[in-house]
Image (cartoon, rainbow, N blue to C red; front, side, top):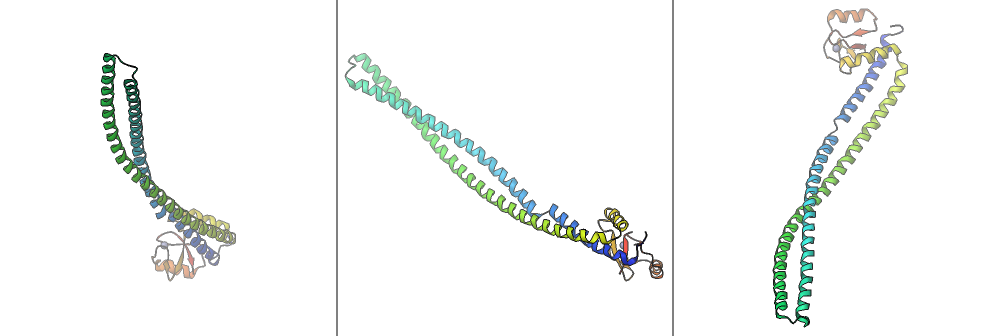
Length: 242
Ligand SMILES: [Zn+2]
């Protein structure tokens, strides 16, 4: 590679530092604990919301039932009033007719008592359902607040990561033009094959990426020549002599 010296390779270490930091931030962003927490809370909220909707539906049914019974009781009470008014109006004198009214009144009163008993049952049931529904609505409100809180913390963490990434991106943009373009290309093509780390310091006979010492022969070669593009014998990464 033309114009590439050992010295000119040194900025690659800085580029590697930046890219590794970017990789770490991206990995962190993909696995934020806040995201997991938010997912769990959102699942829990959905469960509570489903239970709440179910209980509200039961409550609505009970309320309709109660209203219907109330209306029926009112209707019968009106009928009773009407029949009683007829009975005491003095307009009906026929004994047979009077006893028919009396019988009708008895039947109406029995029916009314029966409906009122039913109404009491429904009211009791409705109160129980209402207590459960209120409790679930309260739980849902709490779940909403927890979700909102987790979301706010996730947003804050994401914003912080985005800020750091923007800083690194600016640093990178400034650094790259100062490095041989072919060298950058080589470095970038190597990165995916080496777990994101294409270049390492060669320090005291050792590759600082894989941590293994080079063979005496290779070390001697590095000392003897000024070959710029050196590779670690073990991990095949580019070595920068420092
Ligand atoms: Zn190595």
